[in-house]
Amino acid sequence: MNIELPPTIAAFFQAFNAHDTDTFTALFAGDAFVADEGREYRGTAAIKGWIQKANASYKPRAVPTELAHSDEKIVVTAQVSGTFPGSPAPLHYHFTLKDDKIAALTCD
Image (cartoon, rainbow, N blue to C red; front, side, top):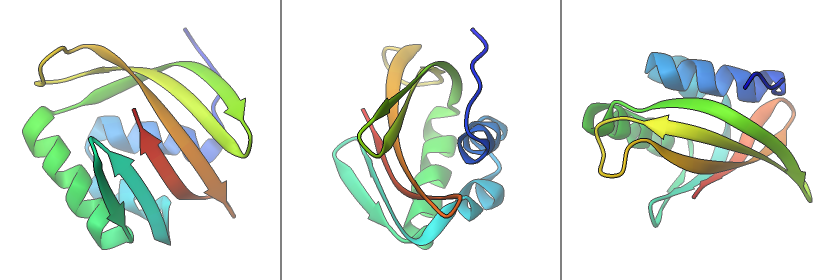
């Protein structure tokens, strides 16, 4: 499925799939918040550590399949594959954008 994502979110998935941690981290606001797998990460240094660990552990790739809006959030469903139990699996990425940066992201 080919869906048109907002530019910041399209760049997120491009950097995510390329495992480009510097470009990935630059998409987040300095005080951004990420919640994933029951843990929280605040600020770009913590977010960079989170994605570096995920890349090393799981080698993930995500293919967006759906786009929806919920309140002030943009929700992208993606088919995520990698070296984790249950791969591939659909995951929901709940983005909050502010000034073309990711201010918050929750993955479930």
